[in-house]
Length: 155
Length: 155
DNA sequence: TTGGACTGCGGATTTTGTGCGGAAAGTTGC
DNA sequence: GCAACTTTCCGCACAAAATCCGCAGTCCAA
Image (cartoon, rainbow over all chains, first blue to last red; front, side, top):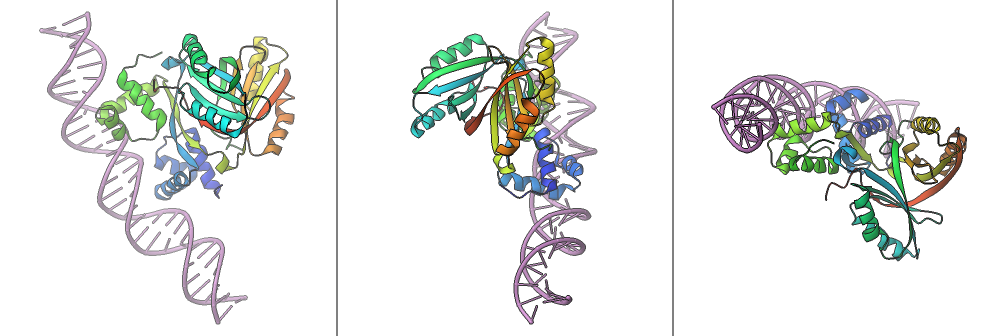
């Protein structure tokens, strides 16, 4: 956990909100000139605080109408079984997120698919028959009210 | 849903994976020169296909140790009640995502917090007492095996 | 053939990125 | 307690690179 000063936090907040600002603009916003601003950003990248940058795409405009959350329980919670399941999830492009949870649900998945048919095809041919899967409960997203990336730096 | 050709799709895939590539680099990767490449990107931005760009930050390195999924049921599913709840969620910085679901669970939330104490403070003072909330079931994330933004353009 | 859309080229402007001098803050030794 | 040293980081200057505009040529489709 790196030691960050106030300027670093403002840099991160700005870049999280608007990842393609120019360095000169960014420097103005945080009250620096461009060179030290760039050096700080590079340092944050090298330290792994900034993992990368991503375009935020409109899924519906690209023909991905379906977002589903799947609650998965496994038959065995042995570490090797968990790893094996996670490795499998990493190979499936429809699975965008895979989180291991406490409690009786073992994993939650976020799945993005083009339509209901291709989702069900995915579910029955890729997810449910995966080794060690005990149960899968899925919930379709009706609408998304909020979708903000990252962490709440604003407080 | 915009009409995209193969070059557009490759542009989007590249920008989703690496949102800060320079335009000249991007142009090379998709087989264009820089000016038409930039015009395509601008057009995709204007069309809303690209909603924006965001830095991907390491939550743990910034002191946000806790990610929680909360399954929320409301007392009333009237449209006005749903809207009211969504509006409230939009005001809470800890709530990073809020999706309305089908089935008996009404909403799923992704919540990011600094530590267990501040999360429980948030839960008992902000979420559970929110108007119209019937029940909240939370699950702590043990570890995250996969976290990929956006849509599966690679297929 | 003509219109429309898009590409590639050239060049002005802006941005990125590096080397260097100097100020501020913290540290060591006396 | 204080001076000298070290460290760190800023801002300036300048070179390299990318952005982004006007313009002319090209490729389809009507």
